[in-house]
Image (tube, rainbow, N blue to C red; front, side, top):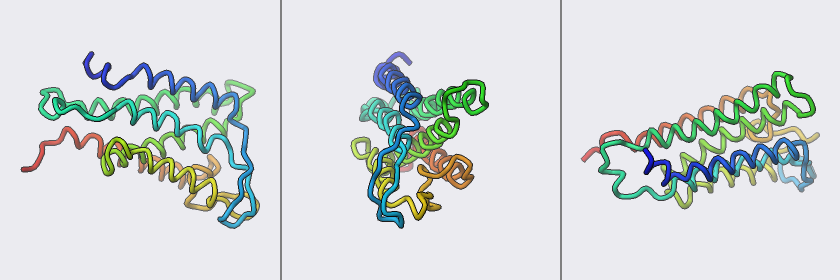
Amino acid sequence: MTWWLHTRRVVLLTMVTIGFWAVTLVLGNSSLPLPQLGGATSANVPFILFAPLAPAIALNACYGTPAPIETTALRRVAALDGLLAVSVIAATAVVTAPIAAGWLSGVDSSTVESALRNLACYTGLALIGRAALGTHASTVLPTLLALTVSVLGYGPEQTAHWWAWPAAHPSDLLSWAGSAVLLLIGLYRTAQGDFPRRS
């Protein structure tokens, strides 16, 4: 277990996640005007569209390249890797819950709810990318989604298209359901590392 904690750089991941939340709580309502190709001429793209990329990318960076010894170890680590991803999402949910419930004032609840949803979406895509493309290219999928949504995701009156889940309002159930499905697929693909290998 100590070896796994060391190789997965849990301290670094914790620091990045705390930094993500500090920046989100301070700059979460900020936006950046960007030209649009999806129907609107320009849109104020919220900071929260990009911020959750940091912990999702850090998670996959902290996984690193699996050592050959992991394939022969008695204790399988894929379940622990999945648990690490879940713990990042759970820690984010713990921060989100009191703000969304209105117990803390001064912070927009829709911002933190979007942060949680987008983190789940990006983490799921990063885990899928890790299984499909390898560790080094794993963050291409969430980064590409964020960039695509920022340029093509907004229609007239700056409303997000149905497929642009990271830009959707937190009340959009499809964006939550889609993000949850991506996360579950990513966790399943991660857990497959513990399954018996077919010869």
